[in-house]
Length: 452
Image 1 (cartoon, rainbow, N blue to C red):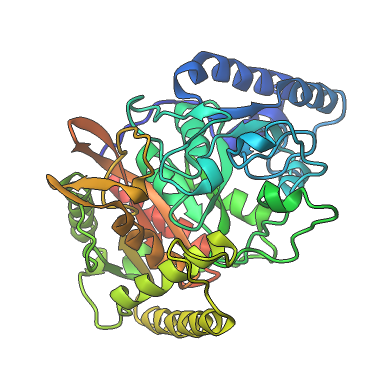
Image 2: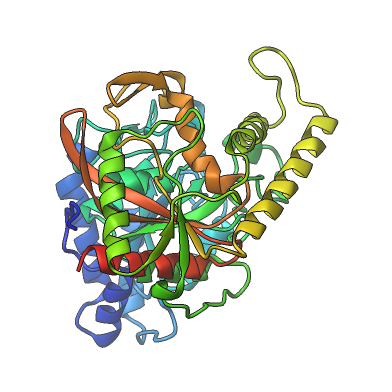
């Protein structure tokens, strides 16, 4: 089952191996990535903040020292989402007023990537305040989907996915609270991983309104929101996850044929367009023919209407940092503790489900890459099977894994035709908490069956 691919450029591990073997210098790898940005980005606009001069100087310095064999990303040119601090570069969250302010230090994740040998050549584009499935703002403009420039690459890590899909860089790191890694991976036909909440620290990923306060240092990670990688293959995704992780992750070597999977393709008030359902059903049929055990329903699935309501309320409080809602009402401490209780109960229900099932399969979103719009996806209508549906309902598919803090890997499964355009389609593989590497391995096993 083929899916659209735009580049044959090597991934991160392959690039690092070529550098370590002497087939490629770090300067050559970085220069080639910068050239690709120059060739492709005039129509895509994925790169918000270039870091070319510093990156090339760093590459030359690395070439003057013995090649490191202990750094998995040794010499690999990559980008990172604009909202992560990189020392000396602006962090704006797409806000014009912060255009000329710069980060004084690297985010903790950036430090870990650099320690692993990565060379950061720039930062990729986002929507204002990271709150849309598009990626445009008054500071850096609009990012386009490299498969179709009239479409969105997704958001809020849309610049990340577009840079990886087009071949500018082999990998990037984004963030996800409402599908912001998974949806761009789905829209752009690349791999993305929503990590277990708390696995990868987001220290140094702070809204500039807060981080510009004197002495402000975030002491906690935002509830629900995670940092997660985007890449063009599963091995790179796993490696990036391990580099960012706070604790070592264990792999469980259970073949896919011995796993029991549950496919969820229908949720309350969240219809899925035929452009997504057709490749999804084709993928499920192919897996079943290969002997993979897939159930299509289970009483173990938590009440998804209730889960979505709790997820939406918690996410809105988090994004507003407790400020009053548009109706003027402010959540109380009691409201917040009630939500924490609801989340804990939901997590326990999912843990019970995973005593029976190894993984859950589901669409990452109800549609493929949406056309550009000046209105946020969640505040406008979304065309699904010819009907206009509330855009906000699309978040149900993101909340499936987000509210219970579960890991979810998106892999490309094929393509569909949405509103007259042939576009990539992905699937999310959701697993138990802390089983991130198993999620990625299961997604890779699924891809091997679908694309052989």
